[in-house]
Length: 183
Ligand SMILES: Cc1cc2nc3c(=O)[nH]c(=O)nc-3n(C[C@H](O)[C@H](O)[C@H](O)COP(=O)(O)O)c2cc1C
Image (cartoon, rainbow, N blue to C red; front, side, top):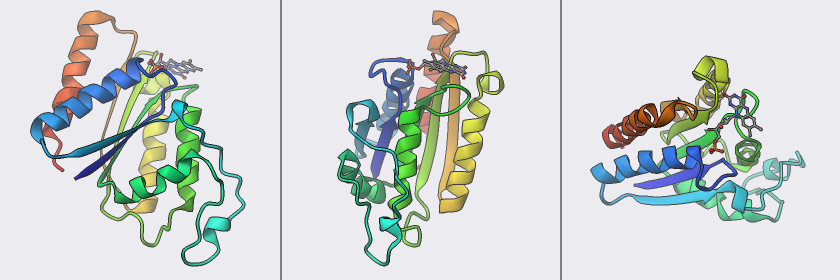
């Protein structure tokens, strides 16, 4: 079982990373033999899609942009589960996450990626998913997974402005979601 976790926060040890780590901890508690790859997008040089459409020119066509994204096409194709972890920025996903997703346009949609699972984790400053704009991101991922015939297994979002007690509760919640995930 291959898991690819994509951290879209520019802060390597921020709220979103903490949430992702707890979720992964939960998964590893239940599944000892999973292989987990993590991409810290901020540390990678990944350019936005330029819509050159080279990737759509016939069988075997590939993305022509020569940057760090080239390391990840195979990893995405080989992953059974993709976990996107993003902070909410202006009622949307982070720019780092959006650029990564745009570059997935180069995948061969005919082969990819029926039955792959996807999980979405988010942190935001406002009170809840509606006020923060997390609802928009959930909706985008619904369209994304429907289009690609992926299985949108679950999403979890939490405010980062809730104080230590509620934060501990929220980390416990995400841990147990990971632990109970059926792979
Ligand atoms: C540029 C920017 C835009 C933000 N926009 C929103 C927003 O629209 N809604 C919201 O609830 N929080 C917003 N926030 C707050 C972050 O989502 C929140 O602090 C999050 O937990 C940060 O995650 P991190 O610790 O991984 O960086 C914004 C923060 C930044 C820096």
